[in-house]
Length: 343
Ligand code: TXA
Ligand code: MG
Image (tube, rainbow, N blue to C red; front, side, top):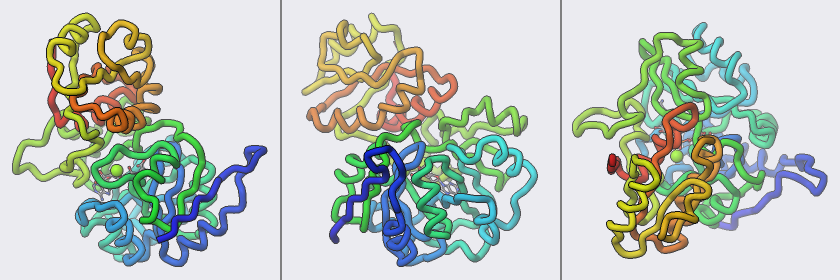
């Protein structure tokens, strides 16, 4: 398949006419689009055949449901059985933005989109290009992250090109994503509500609106064998570079001594800004230690860089779990397949 590359902005920084991307989507095609979190691989959410193509292009397990993206609240009509009062309060505070809400679905949402579940995940992105494309298409768009299944989520159009060239109809380049980690996912389809995936909308912020919200144990820990994942995506190996990754929870001195003493093949440190001058190993810097947003913005690109360097063993400095830092920790422990060394 020939993949069309479309620049979303002209020389003056204005959004170009994106009707071609919308036309492809209306006809059941696949288009990678920028959002404020990560790039999404979009298709018409109400067209089961179109949604099925997403799974084929990504190599995604069929039972892992997709997030449905809307550009205004009217688009929810007929998708969810009801939009309860807590959902309204969340939407008022966090939409458009990086929050996904799971609710019981109607029959209008095909099983391809919902992974066969009785619920559907919905979110209203804030990225102007995503919003323009959804509105021009005039339909809700199903969009998982636009990476090959198992690879780090894409935060630039180049990442999408690397993974999906020849596998999708078009890739829309909207520059680097603002947050760099996927949206916060919560479910209101059960009581009490539950945080399934941490993101830029933090657990503390959600507690302000939903005082009884609980954090799913899978956010911070490996699911025990035989336990059903509340969110199917949580059971798959994720975000992983080819190297073996170990998360080291310690101060810098202990980290440095440990990493230097436990080299195994090409060994690289994934560290914070400035620490690359101290650690006597090749380093990839993923952000400022005290600024978790910078870590979120660069983490996935850094995981891809590790592959490009041919890293075989990676020791990663442990992020704090404050604010968006919890999302960084959640993605890193998955990249490390839950191997954490505490010194
Ligand atoms: O920021 C994001 O959310 C990005 C952009 C493109 O919007 N999308 C994204 O989609 O990260 P994806 O498919 O990579 O992750 C969706 C997660 C998966 O873990 C999936 O299992 C979960 O949400 N999910 C979707 N629908 C669900 C449902 N009905 N019940 C439980 N989990 C659901
Ligand atoms: Mg994904």
